[in-house]
Image: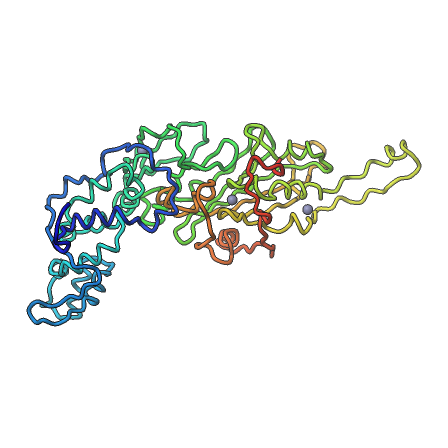
Length: 479
Ligand SMILES: [Zn+2]
Ligand SMILES: [Zn+2]
Ligand SMILES: [Zn+2]
């Protein structure tokens, strides 16, 4: 565009060039999964065509420009106007605020905004990313009239899928019967409203009609909990929407709780959820009877599922990097080996060892007893050896057995969109994770357990991966 007077650039041109050069601050932390071709041509339930107003032609001042009032010749300070633009409530409340400040005869909010000088608009728009611009244009007729319609087709381009999702997620509170699909970047209609049930992984369980539901994707749209059970992201969405906006938006998070028994082993799992500061927290407790004196191959047999050589208990994506499996083996090694009966001992020789009563409480060592926090995602682990009743044991004397119990706590994120939730991405091994914002000093385990007034016994919290290994499956310590 060869315009000799840069001050006469239209708002749209200014907008386009600003969007090309600037990315939303959230963008950097999103992995580049969204480069695939555009799936849907809709913009969710909204259509650009439904917006009828044309594009306003406006001119802008340079960013450093000082505004001079044409009538009075005075230097004008737009600070106050910019402050009123930062208003977060509705125009109704703006109106009443206005009335309070300036009396009932003051200008209604929309007209006040309409009368803002173009330069002020330019300043404000310059600060917005694409999804915020779209939201701005969607918020009322005045804003749309000022911004025009061009942002919709731009947002709908395949390369702007992340921005489109970030815009669509802002509409979540107004769409109780729909659920935002991160694969299509469309709100699908829920086909089983309020009756969505979490089922085993092998059961086909669509809760909306999505063409891409069974297509392979790099996006973690579900996370593995235990063998045969995964948690789809849609259920995190449903649980948090119900909490945030009301029951008609999803399902109670308690409906996700499960008690599971593994088909091929003695492992049992108890999976529970809790919420904290808009995030869904997970606690998964898995246990199995553990014989004393297991050899290394016996320990492996006990800990790893033959299905995928992943632990039977629930783990984050980084379990192969740190000490987790070593610590489990260490804990198993503390189970005391019972002494042979005296008759068997005498057959070997005259020396005998008298058996002592089996210790109910096995003390773990300074390495395997402390809680461990994964440095790469919001997950904490606790390994315990506990005495538990085996009801299938016919011999009443041997009914109480030592069990290994592995508990995992994780922060599953805010349930908006997978790539918008760095906790969800991190537990699934995608993206960088720098630390916890949402749970504070108590950690995820402390926050989770405080819901029942239970304080976790004063365990130290150590790093799960103190040597900061990142070899994953290539490393040699995990098996
Ligand atoms: Zn879809
Ligand atoms: Zn130990
Ligand atoms: Zn992790």
